[in-house]
Image (cartoon, rainbow, N blue to C red; front, side):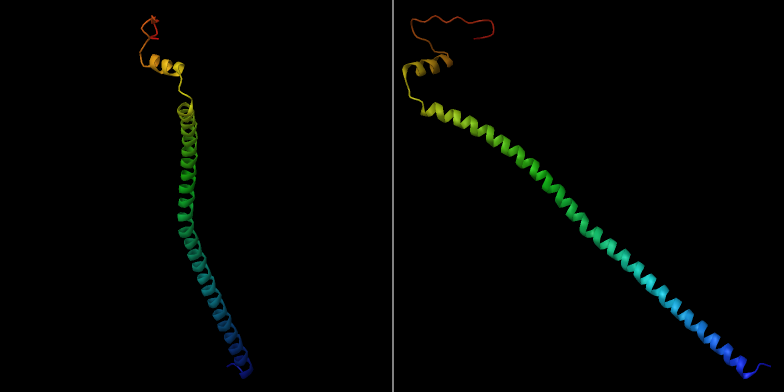
Length: 119
């Protein structure tokens, strides 16, 4: 039979082991909760990052479209400036004759020669 001292020592060891098991179980729960929290955080970050990435791609596409439209605008502005200069130019006989020739008219005393390329 065991003496009271041995039983007390065994009881203390048993309580210590139970305490260690409880501590280990708490750590495991904390680790499990920490892992779940980490996974949830990663999922949230991905869910938020995907729309941001899509919006960034749309912004880049819009910037390219803006650049193309600005180039088209500049070329049309240059063309409009040239037309405005023609409008603002004084109308004289030479100008009227040039426009008439471009449209196929000629003076009564002129002879037109056409080359092979259609001019």
